[in-house]
Image (cartoon, rainbow, N blue to C red; front, side, top):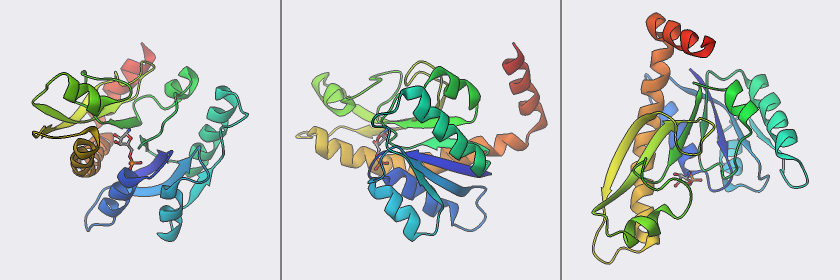
Length: 202
Ligand code: GRF
């Protein structure tokens, strides 16, 4: 399957998806890395790896104008799926509707716990035994779409948001490629496609 990845920053999850796609017998190919931040470190990494990139600063643009431009860039790359990976902007309902069922995100918590920001500090403050990460489908409500995969990460005594984030990140790098590959493999399944078409029609 053709996969486009959308990032805002470091792009370590994008790198995990990219290198996983280069293992033998993988079902995914990264066809575009797109960003709202022309200085995103992940863009330079993608370029060095010979992956097509696209970037446009969102500054001074309305959300609609930026999302339309992103949509055009994605459409031109003909992806079967779009993976948000540290994309730090809200998407317009029109964009989400257009890519519905093909748009995934990774979030650093065990959803439905801790949607939004500061997930590590919130898990620590709550005295949770575990933090973790979740790959989910993107819907209009932030961090609320169908959960496709999760990994729990034990919280250790003395953890800070930073030490916890570093371990959750390791788990993310395993979870995202595996979950994406499993999800796109469903695209070959005729019964699954029919169910999705019914859902879209309703
Ligand atoms: C990850 O923790 C991801 O869960 C969150 O943003 C972070 C992105 O990190 N949505 P990176 O850019 O992939 O390194």
